[in-house]
Length: 328
Image (cartoon, rainbow, N blue to C red; front, side, top):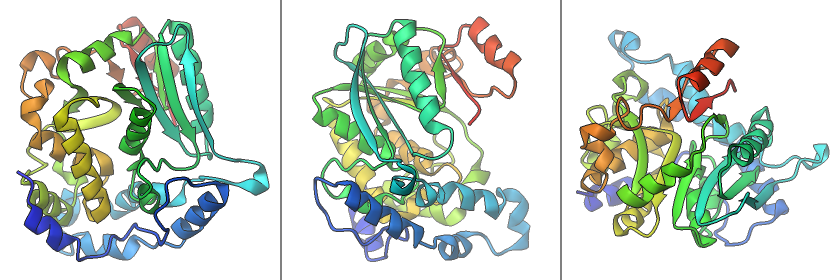
């Protein structure tokens, strides 16, 4: 059950990631420059220090504070635009082979290896025989309802906002892909799972050391879920049937937690939040309760998550995995 009273209470506190950007539906490159300038001025470290346990006895029970800081500052530091280097945001809907109603959603910043990985992933989908569309952004920020841009600094919040934008383009069955993935098998069948089950979620038990006690408490008070006891949803690949009523509620609740900001202070910011919400809606998510659909069974050959050497990369192919995660 969603705790509206406590949620309203938390809203009285300032979102430490939020920037002073006015709500507007259409944002141009000048707006992106303004957004990025504001992001660079956000100092999240004092809030992290406030949340990190002071008791020395806690230190070995949690990841080092530097790791938390690295994860929660990614979106504050990402390059959304860089006119001086000629790097401008890209947003495109690409028809893959014969097209159709299935759509993958991708997004990455302009810096680092990510744009190259994304373009090769799209090419890989073409070559593997996928029929559908890819909706992607490189740089910029998704702003589906006109209010999301001010939350561009909330760690990894863009993933579901991208899916909301793709839905506005007319697609109902959507799968988010991390741009570090590369396909070894045609992933078309994953969309049938989305149609059959209403969602596609890879999950596992996750160590509690990657979420701080304060963040855990905020999630528990707002969602009524102890996220350290729930199945942990991995966001390499995540699918939703946007026509399902519960999905609309799921996205509304997700946006509310983005609005708070503080539930995202962890080593896996969006994953802990989405895991809590998935547990709220678990009666609508077969893979959270059906033993035939847990990762070691029905989802076990979708994503190979470690490819530290080339041999491991190709072994994933030989073992029949659909996607492998490339070094990034």
